[in-house]
Length: 50
Image (cartoon, rainbow, N blue to C red; front, top):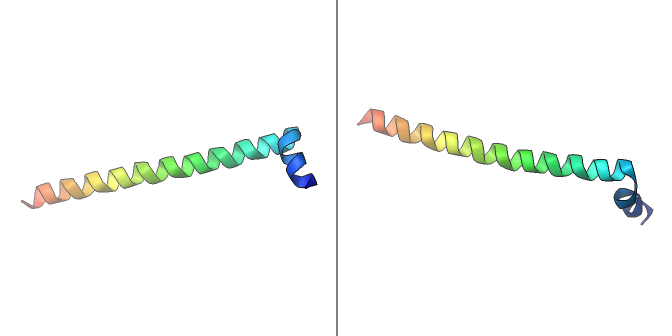
């Protein structure tokens, strides 16, 4: 229980939450970005094949 209190009430705990949140958001953004680029690349490859 002390760990949760420290996580939300201390400066290092809040910084940890911020870093974890940023990493998760970056992971989602990179996944969507690369998935979109792969899809565009596949569309372009199919267009060239015709």
